[in-house]
Image (tube, rainbow, N blue to C red; front, side, top):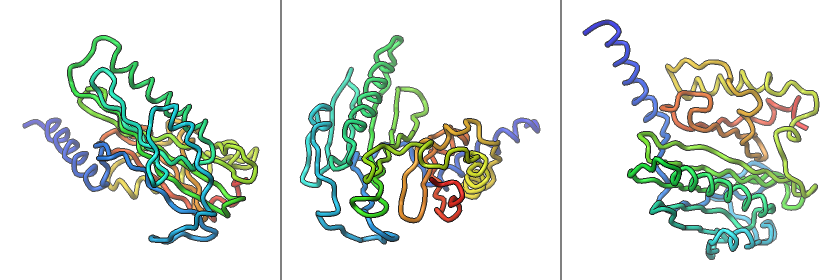
Amino acid sequence: MTTRTIVIAAAAAFLVVGTAACGTSTKPAASSEAVTTPPSTSATSAGTTTSASATPAADTSACTDLGGTVGADNLCAVHIEKAGSPIDMSFPVDYPDQPAVKDLLTKQRDQFVTAIEDPPVSPAAKALDIKSMAYRSGTPDAGTASLVFEEYWNLGGAHPTTSFEALNYDLSKKAPITFDTLFKPGSNTVAVLDPIVKNQLQNQLQGLDLEDNPAGADMYKNFALTDDAVIFFISQGQWTISAAGAQQVSIPRTELASILA
């Protein structure tokens, strides 16, 4: 065995072990259930429950338009088949910006259908599974609501991928929150975030050498807000190698106080 062969074999072994250690999986959730972090005015602990008054009124319009069914838990479940391939989506109907939810999921559904129907069509199994995670910060009337979609894409190739799309909403202003509005105008946001996020990724992926952020501000467009932190969601292969899986990086608000709007 040559030296080059040994190096390649060792690298492949690292990717398999490293990915398993991270606990990241590209398999879809069995039921595409949404996971909700309840609202609070301080740090929310596990098992905390919220009163009905702390929950926005349900709006089932997006669920109806997407062909879904609303369950007793206020979760919309959508299941359709396109070209023999299942599409499953789930989201809470009490997220305050349902038109944005409908637009995002319609776009993802249509992109998947186009990808699997454009020739040449692979005979391999294909699937799109989108589940959601909800987060809240502040008070029910003047805080924020975040909805993060974790998307499992299997287009029939050898390597399915997991990606993220996030929506954020200011409950007092009744307006979306974007990367540009989250931070102070003129602040060098990427320069502040890059070393923090890179350091955390390096700690999460021990032994993997990371290059500098290859996407600039686009790397941070998918985030969620809690009382204590800003959580950034990085899709599979977006910063790290694809074999490392999708990643989440939580940064305490105190570390970002100088740039948060």
